[in-house]
Amino acid sequence: MAQSQVSAKKQQGSVISELPSWEPVLLTISGVELQQQYTNFKNNLQQLADRIGNVEQETEEHKLVLETLKPLPGERKCFRMINGVLVERTVKDVLPALQTNSDGLKRVLDELVKQYKRQQEDMEKWKKKNNVQVVQQ
Image (cartoon, rainbow, N blue to C red; front, side, top):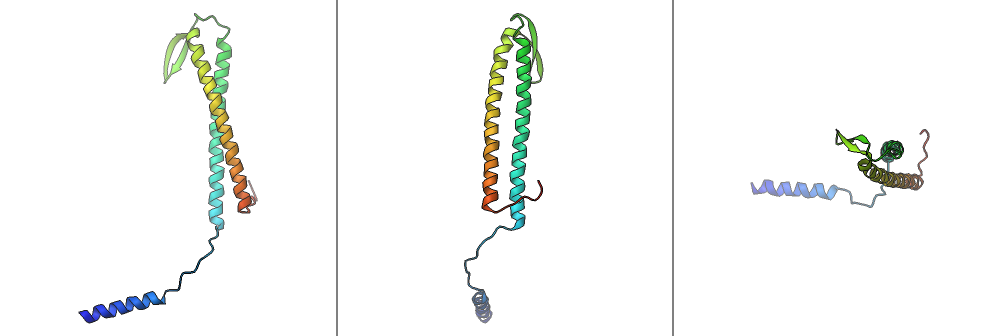
């Protein structure tokens, strides 16, 4: 029994001694990895563009409603959708909330546009760093 343990250890030792020495290896990014990174950049930009489009649409809707309600008397009835429920209010009650929402949407839109531009700049830097040239967009 002891004889087989010694021979097993010798075999393990010989296997370990046969392994090549570890030398530093330059790691390069393959074309597949570059393609995946490029695709990630493009997807992120597309998602931001979609969100910007949605917020722009909501901002325009708020603007249209504000323009419609401002000339009306404050005591006039109007209806507002809150969490999927249509509620009856007066114009004077709805206008301040609508204006606040509109201002908030404009701030969100500005921030999304900044994020989009930042993401675009990061992508351009990445393309230069990795010498990526897009053949077809």
